Amino acid sequence: MLFSSTTFLFGFLPLVLITYFALPKLVSFAVPKTLQGSAERVCQNAVLFLFSLVFYAWGEPVYILLMAASIVVAYVTGLLADKKALPEEKKDSKVPLAAMIIAVVWNMGLLLFFKYTDFFINTINGIAGTQIKPTGLALPIGISFYSFQTLSYVIDVYRGNVKSQKNILDLGTYVALFPQLIAGPIVRYVDVAEQLADRQESIEKFSQGVKRFCVGLGKKVIIANAVGELFDTISNAPKGDLSVAASWLGIIAYTFQIYFDFSGYSDMAIGLGKMFGFEFLENFNYPYISDSITEFWRRWHISLSSWFRDYVYIPLGGNRKGMKRQCINIMIVWFLTGFWHGANWNFMMWGVYFGCILLLEKNFLLKVLNKAPKAIRHIYALLLIVIGWGIFAYEDTSALISNLKNMFGFGGLPLWNEQTAFWLSQNRILFLLAIVCSTPLMKTVGGYIEKKHSTLYSSIFVPVGCTALLIVSVAYLAGNSFNPFLYFRF
Image 1 (cartoon, one colour):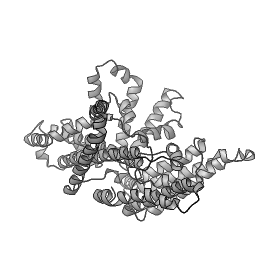
Image 2 (cartoon, helix red, strand yellow):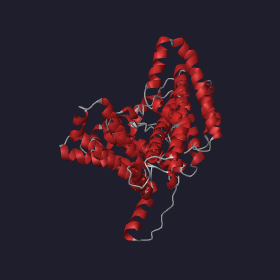
Image 3 (cartoon, one colour):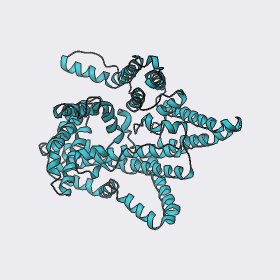
Image 4 (cartoon, helix red, strand yellow):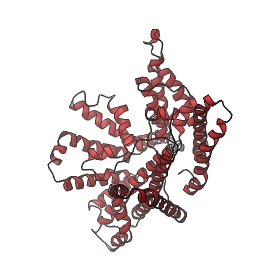
């Protein structure tokens, strides 16, 4: 992730696990028996918090102070925003609202400053012809994730959905928790508040976590990196090697790369969480089996979609103020969704693109689609999804326009050529694997085997499969220098 994956697997992660489970047992001998349970939990949270800071500082030693400041701001504003904690005579106080506004300004201010300042400067320079010098600031990794998490915490406290956290160590553990710190999912405090104070670790849950982690690692290393390398090859190929079919092949490769990369990291985060006793919500639910774009966004990056729904769309009025206002709200949400992904026009175009399709589906298109055969609906959804990733993939506007022209036959390219046949032939097994793993087929087969042969499945199939997956993944990591980290832009 931030440092080499092999270092993480064989160095950092085992050290965290050993410390997490061993140190609290040693501490328990030094405290009274009545306090042993709470002392162990405090110790475990302290271990997670400390190692999470080490994990982040390994790649971002300076910006660890920024995260610490965000934790302190969230802690103080959370306490002040808790209306339920106010005495009866101060129920009309404006302090909770002011605290919530401060949290919004702080978190949005951080994002705007670090992520978008140079974008605004370059835009102004391009429009007005000015020579304002960009700041050149490095983007703190994961700032979009932990800013959204701390902001949702304070808003939920203000709304009365959750009590404010009195223990800054527990809040810091929530914000800095290394399994999901730099790559999501966006874990809301309300979903893990009770787990921070009282969670149950078990051999069964730990084994489930190991299995999920291995699956996620395999998705990222074996599939995402391989199709990503193909996309990179096609994107940088000379025009003489390209064809219309090759342009589509490249974007289809990127379509698989971004899914297996994002969902792979989410699987690893969920698996690591289980190892430490946490239950994180699912973030992907086989989005490429969708029959519409509406369904796709219920299955893709669920934590982000639900965040914008609950903290932007609904506060704007949602669908409660008529169709015109609902359409405006949808477009605002999708413009912001695109803007969240990166400081570049292509991300905003991507957000507006999906916002427009969702508006069409909501107003009339879904009714038409529902009358069509399932295969037609699925082809419709996949086609629009692939085109959407074609917009998302290219931050350079000229490269984006050129590739879209190539895809639709306006780039002067042949429909097919020998180089396209070579790329497809060399990667046909990879694409078949990606297609199969994008569907619930493997899960269905595994469930069938577990049902029919539960002992064989749990004692042989799963451990052997996970071990093989881990060995192959590490071999790929050791032998392949192509290991992109897509979350740097977030």
